[in-house]
Image (tube, rainbow, N blue to C red; front, side):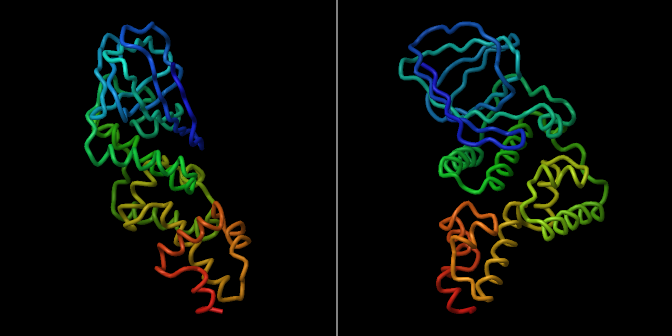
Length: 267
């Protein structure tokens, strides 16, 4: 009756495709298994937890905290489909102003956030770059939390423009040395939260950390092609791309030229 298909797991974040086929009627009471953000893609159901009944459809989302006594009731027979984004304790606290307990009740989801969540799921199903998936999932969680409790998510910013620029510069230095560093690794080295680092980096540079990483990798591809490299599969493996087709897509998007053409132009 309930199908949960994991599609992405990394560094305290998980993404699962959930399909429920319960008949119309009242559900049983059970403890919530994990901390997560639940976004509805299709259908409608009611969640009862902490004395609050939330009617969930594709225009709203809800947060779930582990151990909450919850009940799901289904007003229709045709089931529902959701995306569940799990987040561990430390990451939830870092994004939510130090408190790992996520807000109670339904949260309205804008069309832009709904599209972002559906796009993220599609990219995860395709097996796109894990760094990009992680950062997009983190930003989505933070954006929905921002709707529910704005002041808490906004906390923790550096006190000056100089501090923000210094943080972005330190991240670029670290990535220039070792582009495969993940966002959580970078955040630990720079003693900030992953969400905070991602937000400041984007504000200062105009691009996400995952995009900056892809640009560094593209420059490395160009250098290797200019040196005579002709094996794109080996190049993809050496430089951290998922596979040769991933390298092709990224390089083409960065340069508007196919790698095979670049190889002739540069070598």
